[in-house]
Amino acid sequence: MSRTPNIEPHTTNNELSLRKFVAPEIVYGAGARTHAGQYAVNLGLQRVLLVSDAGVAECGWVDEVAHALHESGIQCELYLECSENPRDKEVMTGTERYRNASCDGIVVVGGGSPMDCAKGVGVVWSHDRHINEFEGVDRLTESPPPLICIPTTAGSAAEVSQFAIITNTHLGKKIALAAKGLVPDVALIDPETTLTMSHGVTSATGVDVFVHACEAFVSTAHSPMTDIHAIEAATIVYECLPQVLSAPKDLYLRSRMLRASMEAGLAFSNAILGAVHATSHAVGGRYDAVHGACNGILLPAVIRLNWGTAEKRYRILAARLGIELPSSTEAGCDRFVEAVRSFVRLVGNPLSFREIGLPELSTDILADFALADPCMVTNPYKPTKDEVMQLYEVSRG
Ligand SMILES: [Fe+2]
Image 1 (cartoon, helix red, strand yellow):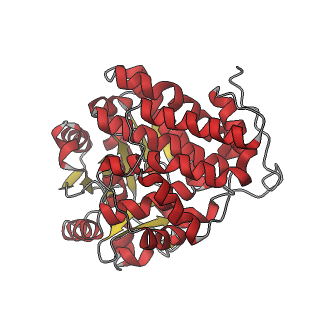
Image 2 (cartoon, rainbow, N blue to C red):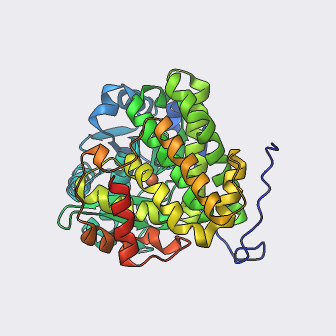
Image 3 (cartoon, rainbow, N blue to C red):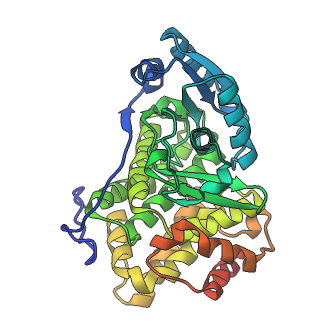
């Protein structure tokens, strides 16, 4: 199969459509993390809030980055209080730490949770308002302080995206923030930092990357500029995720997965996502469930939901993944859904909410949250509330 994408543009997203594409300055490759000090100096920083979490600190990455910053004369205030699904309270506490230490920028080393928390700190500090007031698209009126991201997982791609996801603990839901001001200034993307990912984290975050690529590719906001990144990401993950789970210390495979994460991030940051993330955010916020696991559970049902609207796009994606589909609409859908389910199972992810200890779901409340999620706006099919509730039911197992 040719490696050159042969992607027929969507009729409403042709070559002449106006598009914008945002991305940070990216430094990619082994050892990129050691340039944190140099880039902090380039941004004129003197004292940064260094954001991470306890697990990443235990792996030694925080000490390494702090050392690199000190070597360049940058002072650090450490903030490690980020949980797996970062909460509004953690953002507000981090902002107090930033303010009290008179910081002038943020460096974050970690997965999607610390990166989203760090973005939230920048938003709150620059606007002096509560983080929960910023749900939605383009809600920022001020520029957050400079932000340097060093990812340690191949998953969220928050290091290149214009998104942040924070749990509103008052409402028990995740809120999505999307704005150009949330694109980091610099992404130091270093595959060596992903060598410490556990098997479970590698699997769940890898499935998240696959879903980012799938959703960006069928999004109503996709374009030729995002398609090329989405296809590249999907094909790499489909091939490499099973391999890296068998060879977790293989730096080449780790690098392939981290680049796939970055490519998917460039795609979804600009094409946005869809119903998988909208419904997954609702479950994650209410039950504190693992994001990648929820995505893998919901993806098959969402493909079925979207098939009537996005069959042509899914068929292009399937062809690029090497999945042969029968020509009839119904059989084609069945075959693609089965291939996706097999992939999710192959890499050790659950296929039902029952498997992750959620045999009962408040589908009525979840459906309301999912339909209001900004990611639902670009889903190719506009589902009714009943259809979203049904989607949760069939994914319950
Ligand atoms: Fe995601």
